[in-house]
Image (cartoon, rainbow, N blue to C red; front, side, top):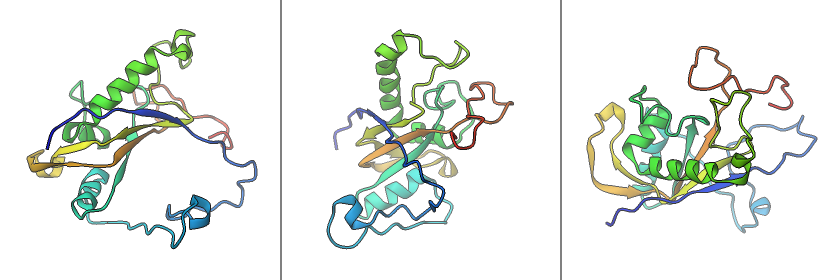
Length: 192
């Protein structure tokens, strides 16, 4: 299999309807009529066996199914602490074991070249600039996973496994002890 660096696409979220008070969390499976598909809604399976999201996506891909993993990304530090030797949390592990980092770096570069960046749309502190939009995500198609996870010592896989993609979504920071990210969570719950 030939390796390649995955591209990326920044996606903006669509606004939620104003009346979301009665909303309930579901299993992620959209009704067929809402998705435009015919037949039964897709089945969502949750695996509680201690594997990371990326390891489960590899498992699903090896079983011959298409899989997309979700990366809980740092909005302000590409790849979390992977480039600075930071802790081996979820995003760092995703970047160490796959081609995801190159796609996130490309998204950051493209964002820095954008009109929005040129106009100075930064967080309150000039030291922090988000590369993942608050109202969107970074979609990295065809991410290759070539290593095992941290629990298995980051050993190399016998052959790389190509996922359909990874969707990187930034989480708000509400912890004042985190030094590489501003406190950026909205104070108003409805806005949050």
